Every structure is written in C-alpha cells, then in structure tokens.
Length: 162
Image 1 (cartoon, one colour):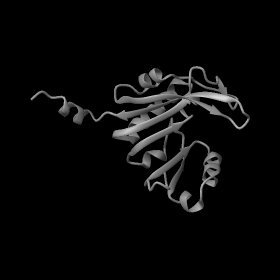
Image 2 (image 1 turned 135 degrees about the vertical axis):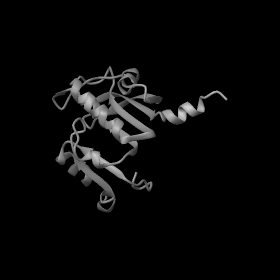
Image 3 (image 1 turned 90 degrees about the vertical axis):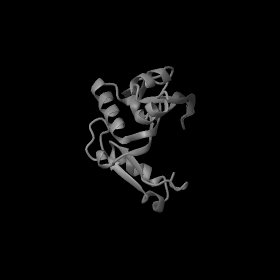
Image 4 (image 1 turned 30 degrees about the vertical axis):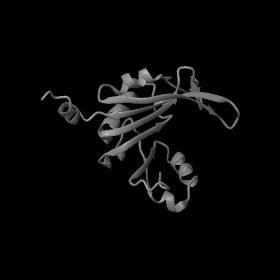
C-alpha cells in the first residue's frame, strides 16, 4: 500500500511482538509511513484515536474471536472506524478450514455468516474461497469477503421517488 502511495495506513495487533515482526518485513523508510498501534480490537483504547478509515482489512483476526463479547467488541470497533461508503475486507478460515490454529480454537465462517455478522449496514460485494499453502506444505481453506458500508442517507436519496 505504501508503494502504491496510499496514505494514513494503520497496522494494529494485540501483540507488540507481531507488529515488530511485521515491521521488519518491509523497508524501514516504508515502515515509518505506517502507524503501528498495539491494541485489543475487541476492547480498544489506542485505535479509537483514529477518526475513520476507508478500508478495513482483517486477515485472520476475526476467526480467533470465539466469545460473543469479543465478536461484539470487534463489530463495534469496526462500525466506529469504517466511514460511510468505506470497504471491509475479511479473510477467515472457511467452514472446511482449520478448527484450531497455533493451539487456539477458531470460529469458521462462510460468506453468509460474515454477512449476517456485519448486519444491514454493509453490502456484500464479492467473496471467494482461497487455499493457502503454508511453508510446511499443508493447506488451509479460507474465505475472503469484500463489503461496502452503506451510506444510508445517500442510499435513501437515490431511492426516493420523484
């Protein structure tokens, strides 16, 4: 994203170690263009300093949230941060995917389950299955989804009868 001149890029994780590893994977000058925020997305403190985002990209976070209160906190945070007309990309283990990852239980999804989870504020634009090949050679089935947050005021104006 940095190479494509995107601005206001934020990377967040509950693990400072995970963010430090991610930072090492990219060029130092590019890493300086990213805000690195350690926070719990289900009960955030630091991430809420951001006004809004155009794109929320979650690759493998949601499926680790197996408790209802964690999922609720995640959704509340997502709704606070994703602007109207913004996009949400979520990649999680599919129904055929792993039931555990790194020793942790996971919740598996299909596109309909993610659509139901996000609710009426989001429109599903696209979804696809993806088979990830791990360095070990094992494969893991994922489902990727793309949603757009509905701008209800604009949507209502477009659908008013003359």
